Image (cartoon, rainbow over all chains, first blue to last red; front, top):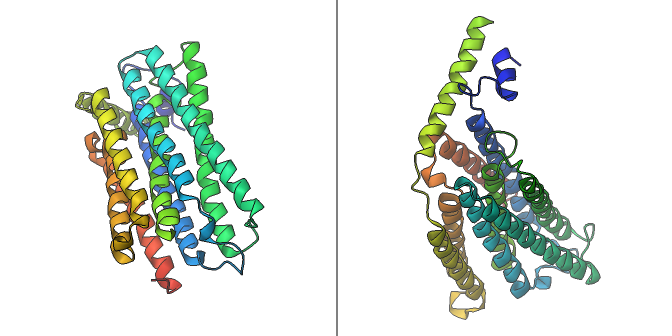
Length: 200
Length: 116
């Protein structure tokens, strides 16, 4: 690392150096690479959606239940953008409220996914049951892990806000976590449409 | 070393300047508009959920409609909630390159296995 980069990372010469755009660029690069990751998994699911080895398949899907989960995740994008808006307006109380609301909505989505997986396992669909089961659990499970990471980041942000350590110019700030969270939401929009609705 | 340091400083300063320029774009939607966008997304989701249960929309018509509705929702979240509509071209390009890469690989995989 060069002297200038080290100084920038340590907050030196703050009047000249602002690493915020660099971190934001890194986040967009990360999200772009995540597209390829999820694209591969969705393509794999589509390849194996009918390969059930005589086991359960898409008839297990409970569209009304998954629709409710999808709605919850969609609304979490609203609370996230409201948190970002409040943060930009330096309203820390509102920021905290919307961050906690987003984390709770994300947790609700995760609880729904755990319930769905439990139901499917009881009905005989496990990871090794068939290529359909493997590709379904890998795709939706990895998305769930992304949601879980997001919930942890949001919770950390909310906790930091209580001690006034929610900064705009260092670490992962509300805007960057917001970008990540909305990305998780748009990936679910694709999964919900391609994996659930199109197979219904 | 001095030349290298100067180049890094210029790059960081330039990026910072761009970002400050972006921050002047305070034309992001208002909280009220965010609620309206969320309402529109909810309505679109409702229509999506109804499509598979409508017999007249069975087959390619229904699938096309689901793609269009999903695409609109995707676009609205990206443009308005992620603020990509208001961002500088670099971020738009990074997003589109990732999206294009995913679509290209998606199509290549399905073609390779003769799934489409």
